[in-house]
Length: 248
Image (cartoon, rainbow, N blue to C red; front, side, top):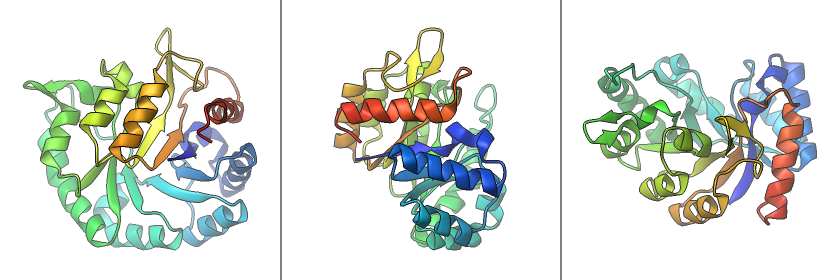
């Protein structure tokens, strides 16, 4: 498994191409060798390829705008081919207060997932805590795993949001085995705070064991809220902790 950085962590620094370029350099200087591109300004695929190569980085997954996924799927595939990325993610879907939009997700993204697969890519859905609400006796996340075959859609499991939803991250990695090639690592601290890896209370020993057994390839460090600290410093401390555990 490889350790990477989720650029949503440093999104505030990536709202123009100059900032995005500098952020990629800083992430590479920390020691990361792969990234997820998410929450940044718009970019040309060839520009991103050049910037990644310049910094010795690979983009292994993106979060791609819903409109592009739905209406310009073939261009999305071509762009990801140009910068060498096989995993194409959706970062959010509004299932509604009582999951009343669940069927709309199936109707909208079943065709997208099929088109991406036909183009040699793999559709990845990133959950939050609200996917732990239940439809009958199953969580939304469990329902998604039932209604999409593993070959159709993967889940970008997020350790913080599983815990926030009342689940156990390692258990859900086991449940979703075979469809979790990319996961998000973020720690959960007292007060429902997002924390640097190792500075919260998630049992990462179990997470890493379950991820290895479930086929995870990339573990991407993400901290949506750095609690007033510099996000690059948070990424640096997480990397140092993971390195001390023999994982980076």
